[in-house]
Amino acid sequence: MRSPAPRTTLVLGGARSGKSAYAESLVEAAPGPWLYLATAQAWDDEMRARIALHRARRPANWITRDVPTALAGAIAESGGPVLVDCLTLWLTNLLLADADLDAATEALCAACADARGPLVLVSNEVGLGIVPDNALARRFRDAAGRLHQRLAADADRVVLVVAGLPLIVKPQGTP
Amino acid sequence: MRSPAPRTTLVLGGARSGKSAYAESLVEAAPGPWLYLATAQAWDDEMRARIALHRARRPANWITRDVPTALAGAIAESGGPVLVDCLTLWLTNLLLADADLDAATEALCAACADARGPLVLVSNEVGLGIVPDNALARRFRDAAGRLHQRLAADADRVVLVVAGLPLIVKPQGTP
Amino acid sequence: MRSPAPRTTLVLGGARSGKSAYAESLVEAAPGPWLYLATAQAWDDEMRARIALHRARRPANWITRDVPTALAGAIAESGGPVLVDCLTLWLTNLLLADADLDAATEALCAACADARGPLVLVSNEVGLGIVPDNALARRFRDAAGRLHQRLAADADRVVLVVAGLPLIVKPQGTP
Image (cartoon, rainbow over all chains, first blue to last red; front, side, top):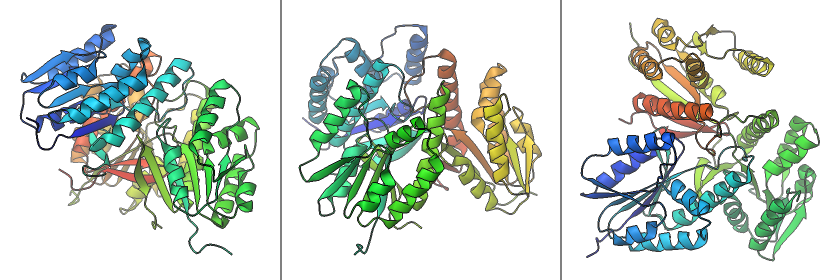
């Protein structure tokens, strides 16, 4: 049985903006258990430390599943509140795997539309600095921008987190 | 004859934020034909591809004029709705030509104040990342920030586009 | 004697966003004299020029004190309206001195809570671009994000300045 009001929230924010903690609080507003779809892959010690920090903050009734790329399927299999943290790393993993980004984006949008419980998607806003020197960074930045536009068009709510505080970009209920 | 309510809108946004599409929708809210003042110069294939993409999106009743630097004059000659896309490249062109930026900014502001139709100016927000390593990028970033402040002070409306959605920074009617 | 409504405002913004001028206007809304706690250290000509520009803009009834790192003490000694410009450089100075950032942040928060007059803290938002290549820049970006979250949680008001205009992130009176 589906909940009467499935709701997708896109949470954007800069580095260390508090977007993950804010997104967790949105998910925890619904009754648990809560599913955490983690896209991070621990390539190096810096990343391992970040992952450990995020895990340590979440209480025990979070179920964590590592999903580097197959997000659409994992969302389709879920039955309750879901947090995806974060799309930035998912997109990076897809880019490095030379995947079809448009197809992956559409599959993700379809899965979000069909999700049984509330869904919160976290992603880094990366487009507000100077044009990066290297071509891969520019390609990533463009792909992230397109992804955010596509998801924001469908989302019921879009939030930009600044210094831990939510700036509402698309209030719930906006067509 | 001037329209009773000429109105200048400054549309800021990050890379691939959807700012151009949003700005086009603002211009198309007024009756056409619409004048597109394009500041892009196709230095390389990447830029050529971006220009082609932007052109393909605009319907046939847009008139496109290439104006790498002489924006004030082109606005003065216009008689209806105008979209300037984008100021970032205009500023880059001026910087590379070693032009007087303050004089060019004041001439642009004067032309905006006298424009016959509604005018929408698009520019990249580039100041929200780490300080760039190279001095030219820092000089550009400073010039863009000053330009945005100057234009925003005069504009009737200022919008920051995030993931295709408008965050209103200066609502129409603010003194 | 303490003023009945001490109030801390965190003013964030990008490079050349007009955040300093906006912050000065907030401080000048209270009766002077006003204390300017300057954290900038003139390492080179570019920085010297920036400092001179900021000083030239402030009227004579501002008292300027250079405080590269000992902000908490300077705030504790103050008796009226205070502007701290900016935390970005304070944090840079602490990082370069290999100081304990968490301890310095807590001491700053305690001093803000005890301040006698209204207090306006200015800082650069630096987390909205692509991940920087070099590790020190990433470390700085993380530290700045954590500092902003911590201060924003305590602040009575948080503002993001865009093109010289305030986007209210935390309105006064928000718990």
